[in-house]
Structure formats: C-alpha cells, structure tokens
Image 1 (cartoon, rainbow, N blue to C red):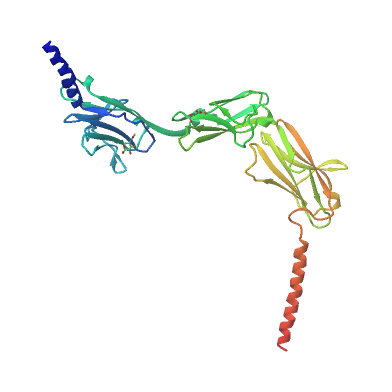
Image 2 (tube, rainbow, N blue to C red):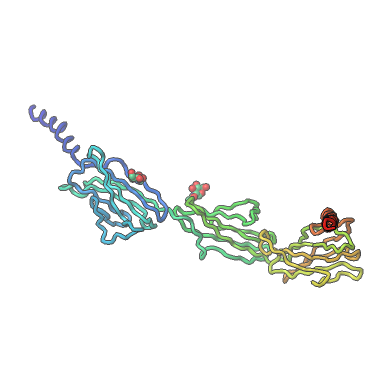
Length: 374
Ligand SMILES: *[C@@H]1O[C@H](CO)[C@@H](O)[C@H](O)[C@H]1NC(C)=O
Ligand SMILES: *[C@@H]1O[C@H](CO)[C@@H](O)[C@H](O)[C@H]1NC(C)=O
C-alpha cells in the first residue's frame, strides 16, 4: 500500500516539476510576408532557456544559420552596411522569456521558405528537442515573359489566332486580356482571364492592340501590348461627311478622312467633275497632309485635304480613297457653299472694327499732341 502512495506523490510532484523546468518555445512563430529587397523578421520566444542553445535553420535550404546570438554561416553578406543575417536577443522584464529575432535583410526569392527555431537541450536526443517552424514568403511583382508572349500576329480574315502571355511573380500572377483602346474584345466582353486569348473567325475590325495585364497584388503590375494586324481592304471613313465654306473670301476648307488598313494603304483624293473623277495633287490650290494623333488605332491613318481660296467651282463631291494589295475603298465628302466664313481661321468682325477704332484714336491723339506745341 505504501509504495502506491509514494508513486502518486512522484507522479503529481516530481514529473511536473521536471517537465516545467524543461525549456519550451512559447507561442507560434508568426508567418512573415515581405517584398523582394525588404527585410524579414521571425521571432522565436523561449521560456526557461537556462544554458541550452537556441538555433535557427533555413529548413528549405537545409542551412543552419545561428546558435544563440551568433550567426554560424561562413559567409554573411553585407546589405547596405548591415549583415544579411542577424540575431537580436530581447528578454522579458522578469527575464524568464527570451526572444531570438532572426533578421534577414535584402530578401531574395531563395530566402523564402520554412525557418525552424530549435532549443538544443543538453543530454537529450535531437528528436526530443522542442522545435517550431516560421514561414517566410518573399513577394515578387509580376513580370511579363516577353520570350513566351506573342508580340505581333498577321492574320487573314476568317482565320483563328491564339495570343499567348506568360508572366512570373510570387504569388503567381493572374493574367487578364483587354483591348488597349478600351473597346470590347471580339467576344463582346471587356476582359478575358487566362494566359491564352483565342480569337475565332477574325474580322477586319478585330485589328488592334491587345493588352496582357499580369497582376498578383504586389505593386506594380506589368503589362504587354500585342499587335493583331488583319490583311484587309482599307476601311475609309470621313471625319465629317459635309463641310461648308463661303466663296470668294480667300477662305479655305479642310476635308478629313481616316483610313485603316493592313498593309498600309496609299491615299488619293479625287474631285468629281463633269468628266468624271479628277485626281487631286498637292499644289498651290490643294494641301494634302497626314495628321499626327495619339488616339488613332493600330494601322489607322488620319489625312486632310485643304482646299485653298474657295471659289464657286470648288463646291461639290470629293473622294478620299485608300488602296492596298487587298483592294480599294473610298468615301465621299461634300463641300457646300455657306453664306458666311466657317471655321477657326475666319477674320473676326469685332477685331477689324476694334483696329479701325484704334487707328482713329491714334490720329486724334497725334493731332491733340501737335496742338500742344502751337
Ligand atoms: C518580430 O518582432 C519585431 C519586434 O517586436 C516586430 O517588429 C516584427 O514584426 C515581429 N515579426 C513577426 C513576424 O511577428
Ligand atoms: C487571381 O484572381 C482570383 C479571382 O479573382 C483571386 O482570388 C486571386 O487572389 C488572384 N490571385 C492573385 C495572385 O492576385
């Protein structure tokens, strides 16, 4: 009977006492998420450390890093004047708890992974040492892999084309396709998720810039513009299909048209006469120019024809014509007579009246000035 009582005492008093004197890792190590180039901090807090040793190991690389406050790596690089790896020790006010903070500076992709904090207890097998894992995630902003991404596609009408876009980054970026001009994609949706954009039964209007956007929430996102060129007859549109101007006032009129084509179209302007269409040349009477504009679509060109010193015989039908290897198309612009001068370059009646008034005032001033000398 007596030994049973002693055993109970032993179980209740001695075992907890021994166990409680054992060093332990308190609290979990919080996962750390940082961007490439930044510094990561992993905190391992131990209680009742005594003379035992606390170590940090990069488990993923099987690389022992530290023993207590000492970095055991043979090479500890310098990052902006500070060591890449460092241990900072902090004790709680009662001295019972000690935190070994592992600092990893200038984070690179291969610094990511699991780090273990272990208390090496003297006289115990390593399998029995308390150990806890802390996770370090190194975020990398997205980068489009241009070598695996479509840059430019030439297509015939009715064909099917596949546009591809690949990107790296941590976490793995999501890839979204949009049209660079903000229009809807050929499937009438504004965005398409996925690295592959398949375009079926290509139409002339599908020509344009398709933008691949790679995003993984780590700033900044990356993007890449893919050109889709569709072999087609030129698409010719007037900017305004009628233009008015007054005759006999040395006024001019500007007729504008936009041609969208692949391959590039050759432009010609014509005027309808009683003998048929007359080709217009750039000369004293006509000025033919290409306009520069940032909001033109891929393969689109903006032209104008300036008809100078408008006379009665200038009114009528004009044609803007584009032609390439795929064919020829044109659009009509009507130049009609107005009563008053049209457009921004008309002489202002207010200004001419104003300058006449100024001249009269100057003459009056001049004479009154002369009179003072008499
Ligand atoms: C570790 O402790 C330091 C200092 O208290 C703190 O700045 C850092 O955020 C902690 N790291 C983690 C992952 O909790
Ligand atoms: C990708 O998109 C999905 C759905 O919108 C989202 O849940 C996920 O967080 C995104 N992934 C990244 C890395 O941004």
